[in-house]
Image 1 (cartoon, rainbow, N blue to C red):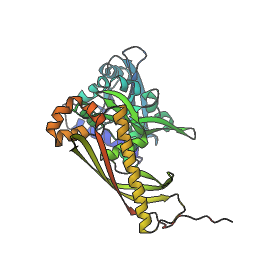
Image 2: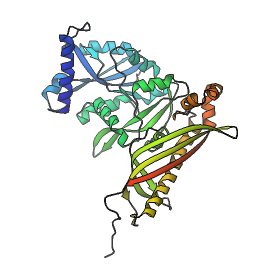
Image 3: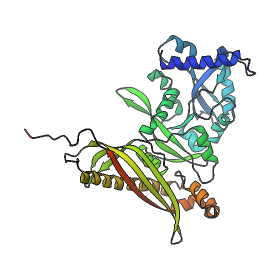
Image 4: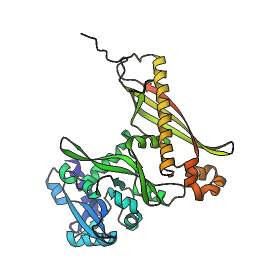
Length: 385
């Protein structure tokens, strides 16, 4: 049985179980449309929203080995108005508890997201573990509509991508509950992964890379996938991925697999100035050597570790300085740490934290330990013939 069929069977069984137990919220499965995900864009008219929902086609999915889905698009003044209007199109009530993705267009994100996610947060049938994305394409609809070319339920495919994103670490994994918490929290700024259409060999797929940065509920900028990796180091959220290490000439020479990392952050006062100290401890494996030299002894290993530490320190500082200068948005959680560790200091600077954050001194010290190496202890040597 295919994975999709198993999912549909479980969903159907749960619904039938609820019905058979005589629950007050009784419903017939034939009267429900299961929403996998939703894309939200600006409508053609001023003030309008354009919403595209991806609906799981349970009947078609059970008959075929391919995923069954339908797309419904409707414009309206409010999310609630649009969702209710979709009932007249489907002839069924929309069932939201199995939705996995909310994709916002960049236009919506920059204008303010409260008007489109407040409804989702209030609805009693929605779940808080849905993933949120910001589209780098012209529209969010373009992303969710990739279902037609990939022949899969795009929202569920995106959820699977986010579950394995820790192996890549080029985008933050953000569920809507966490996104809303950061919108509401003092001293914290919300972030969301960026998503775009990747085309290769005439095949289009959705790819997640980079981070959208929010102040209040408005997107104010973005950082790349590579910069996001070092943001995750600073946030103590890195779980995997690859660390490219340059040699003394500045050329990429080694690839380290990140096995584990721990970042400790400590705010301190130095000569009357606030300073944030970051200490990272990274365990890694040497997976690729682009140099023709020998790296099978202790001294060579320590040299690579030293180069990796230097690279890590520089890249973490680079992304922090960029966010300080360009956005004045504390996406690293330093303000929350100050609130916890230095409550009196935080009371004095909380209202002006954006400005204070942009000027605070950052010190990074990294330690890299190579625990394992590639299967061969030496690089491949090519002899002239």
